[in-house]
Image 1: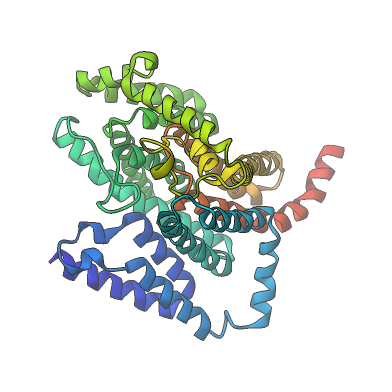
Image 2: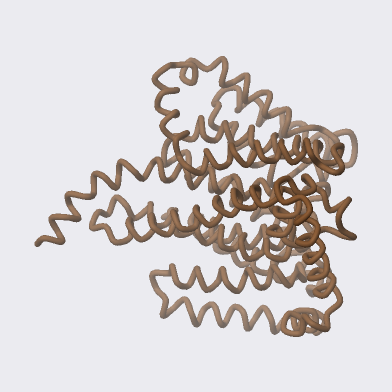
Length: 425
């Protein structure tokens, strides 16, 4: 029955993709983040659902009169000038170079092909998501896809007393409990963005429930990195709250309730965050970080290639920063950090500029930029302890940030005369 249900869902998504190309981008997000085939039992479990949707989306773009028009293509070319997209292209070329010079080419080229699939899907996002409403629907689709998985985990944790760890979809790149915790925490700001942009009472209540169960899911993943990321994200959300006086006590009460209902074993495990010198896994992580830094000095330009830890270290790097440095050298790390840090700075400026504007038209822009920044900061914190440098959600958020900037430019220009007149008056 699961296989049949999955096939019916994929047929439905494929049909909609052929009819409305931009909705195909949302369908890719559903399949990419929910990974429904991981819950199948039969032949559907190995079904290349993501690749099938990319093929259908390509066909849809080629046959659609709208996307084949010269006017449409000229409008989309303006987005391609964003600095983030140039750096993403350079980073992809760097991945190809380091794969060519990899110490283990077979593994490196396989990883490179997986990365390329993600980048190909992002080109459709750039091409087809061209309005504020489409961007909003894309973010809601991503948030809902991840939140439904987190809700499943949160409900399971409540029913079992939080003794079992919460995992992601089987076969996905975020199946591991630590990875799924960071993904869940990154998604909470996107849920808050949905909440701010929605005015329907029942939908808002639904999103609030999803957010609370996401917090439960992140906590009961038993991930120390997830807890650190959740703590910082919670402070960011309070900072962005319009009612800080009410938000702080509510947050403290929620954390007190959550921690008070977690088992003693969970408290003991989280307590090792402050005693990392005597904790086995923390010590082993620092040792493998030293290995990565020491080894890359012998190959500073190309590193060991994607997934090079198989050759260079005894275990995974357990840090996206060390992973990017060791596997792609100093050029790869510089490009990757420029994308991540630069996007956070760009979103911060966009948030400051739109929130200080006298125009009410820019309120949505402040919400979008603030929550996207919180999500990227959650990633930056979680990635310090996990090898997440090739994660598709990161590059999806970077592309969304570029689209947001493209939509913001004309609005900011229109608001400048009003802001100037107010400051003079």
